[in-house]
Image 1 (cartoon, rainbow, N blue to C red):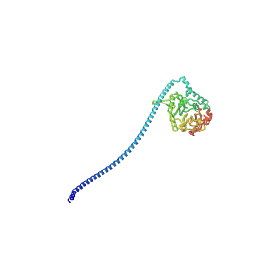
Image 2 (cartoon, rainbow, N blue to C red):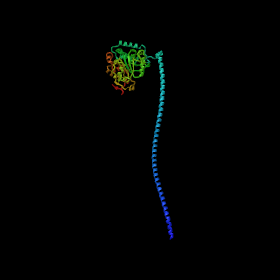
Image 3 (cartoon, rainbow, N blue to C red):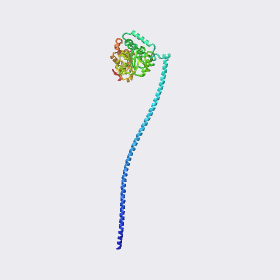
Image 4 (cartoon, rainbow, N blue to C red):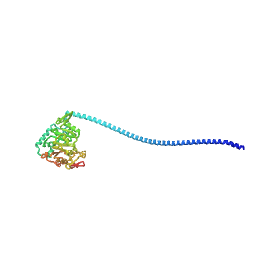
Length: 430
């Protein structure tokens, strides 16, 4: 009996100790569990934070990828710009080489012009010393243009006196054709004009010529219809020319000719010549009247000569400031008297054939007849037509029509039919 009780007593002492130990163990485990829970919560929070940071890193990575793509795109654009600039540089180098080449050509031309100027100066010095016998032989009038004898004016005036003494009261077209000869004119117009003025007389001895040049002369002489009257017969004149170089050449001729070289003045160190007047101006229908008034306020010049390729008809049609006694115009002979047409577009002049004018003879006849003029002759070469104011021509010149001018012409009346043409779309009926 005492043994169980002893055991009980012994267990009664042991159990509380075990229980306490178990409680301590449980408390320890509980604390450990709490610590584990706390650690788990911390790990979970850390995991959430890490996920958040990972997501941010993903966003940063996507942003950096987009930046990288944009940088690649900009790099590609810069490469394109670089290639374009390189191409521009190569083109600029090419143009620079071309400019250098052009500069070399211009320098070569400048040297060539300097040599030519020196040569011309040398020639001028030789001319001032006079011509040799051999040179004079080379200047025969049949082979070279515009070499004139010193007694030419006297011979012309003698011829005019013979015409006045022996002419009938009425001069015919045939008489004028037979009177033609050239002094300065390109063809036989000088003689025809002298015959006309020997018959109707001279009033103011003033001539207006529109369109002039020295280009066809070997010696730089203006081959005008006015030159002979100015040089050999004491006329005053106004010459209008569009090209400044031609104006200078014409003025240079008159400044040196023995008959006109005295008509000059010097103002502010500049030389100018007042007879004839050489005016650089593009004559048009709009400025013709004012130009004539500004040059010389003479309402009835003895003579007007108009030679403006594809512009003369419109100018004459618009002109009202003057009523010349005699008008000479160029006409296109290849239409004969069959078409009354005008070519107003100057760019079309001489494209189909070498034209002698931009208006047919019937076109001029219609216009000038309505203005009170009478056709009296055409030149032997078929370039110019001579119209005399009807109040002056009456009873002194036999009237002439376009048809009769061709029918009675010694050459044009015998030309084959193949020579005549019909107007194309560049010609307008008038």
